[in-house]
Image (cartoon, rainbow, N blue to C red):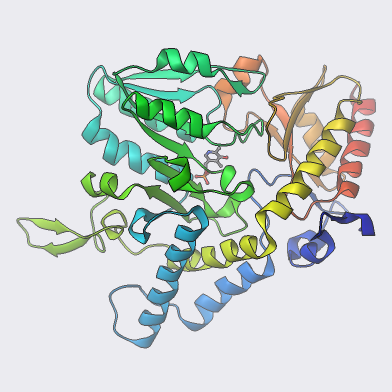
Length: 413
Ligand SMILES: *Cc1c(COP(=O)(O)O)cnc(C)c1O
């Protein structure tokens, strides 16, 4: 199935595939074709091995013990924080807070920064393109505080920046925007969005759940105030993620949760909180997965994001070109700048029926609203079929998707 032409622009896809054991398995008697990477990526052997190594050799609680295992676990846990700092080019390690993932990162900001800084009549701006996890926390905050949620509209998958400019005012306190849309693949012009927000005196939170795996992230150059991502979409384990925040902002924010780890001294009358980043990491953290995040980030860096991006964009172009030739297929989201996500609908056919028929051929795609129901509503559809490509996908796999779709369309129409 793998042919020599899978080596694209120096990316040796054949060698990469060998590092992902899940890609060897069969589904419904066919080799797995995994095109659900925007939901979560498969894990390379180095990541799986790092998790086994942690639990086999140096499992211990961090920061509190003086014994060897505790020291080793703490060193690995903190080394992972350093790796995350480098990966997004934060200026200091105190700005890297471990979370459960993007959702928790956004909720942390809404809960801690939001409850301190948002008052009645203030405005928060999001976009029509948001994942539910960048909508609901702000709705909850606005409802509690009597603040107003405003929304930047989009057209064909691109944000309307002129409309955004009209929404900004001295009432705007925060703009929270998705860097890359999980449903459409659009890369949003976050630098321009951030600059305009700052001119209006507002802070900016960037949802980096989709961008962190595909784009080079430099939070200092971007000048965002908060940035959140999830390990599991960057070839790492689930249950761990990172919230970046500018140090002076994090320092001024009250803790998110209370408990162990986040304190300096506790008496029954009063508690002094720990320094950054520990102030926001109450309780025993997810040590094992945090440690392994470094293995995932190092893996991506070693292979090289640019090489991977070139390969993925080639797959996107190849897939898009073929999809539009199928009867009744309409691409949803045709922004000029996209990552390797293609969403589409087929006339008179429910996305879920396609998903089931493709699964019967071992092909994993996602169907439905992709946690972006308001966006689907804008397009007047209940959902789409989404194929999202990763470093290990090939043109031969895209060919199989196209054949699967041709058969499914013939069967369902
Ligand atoms: C996946 C995703 C999230 C939520 O990430 P979790 O890992 O589920 O917390 C938020 N925003 C976007 C754009 C996503 O793709």
